[in-house]
Image (cartoon, rainbow, N blue to C red; front, top):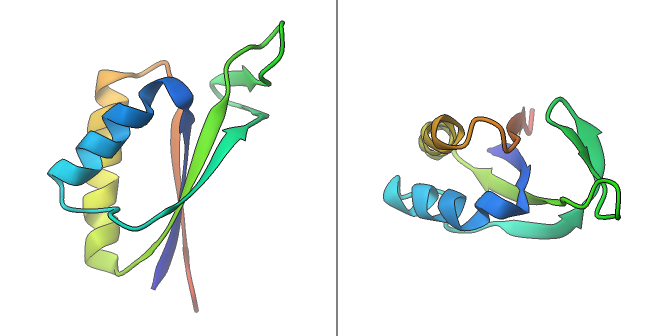
Length: 93
């Protein structure tokens, strides 16, 4: 099993869900809403200075589904290159 963490700007959540559905992937996930932090796309703090926020999807899946999820994420990143979408993967080994 592989644990995937997708961290993305709230503004693209629907686009991400659509891309996952198109690739028959990421059907089961845990969502952590309103995530704050600073990454390579800049601060997302949910305050008056940095008003944007992120969300996190945590998905446990097999390797073939992980590949489909990566493909879906890549398509979203192409469409929204400045919104900040990151994918991290960890194996259970």
